[in-house]
Image 1 (tube, rainbow, N blue to C red):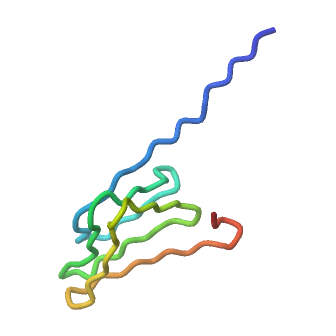
Image 2 (cartoon, helix red, strand yellow; image 1 turned 30 degrees about the horizontal axis):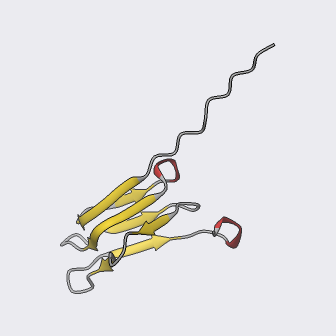
Length: 84
């Protein structure tokens, strides 16, 4: 009897640029790789929501910035068990 197992395919989601509307980074698209500056800002006070269990990695010298003068926010909730 032969058993075929397909490898689990995990694709990186590269992110950069301005987040000006409510956005969710999902576990299904994790890990997220910050390849350029990510700026959360906008007139509608956008929120970047990072689902529990999502991994966010940063390329060298890259950052995620929340501009409080053009309101924005980040919501990231998880548990110690989900941390790497």
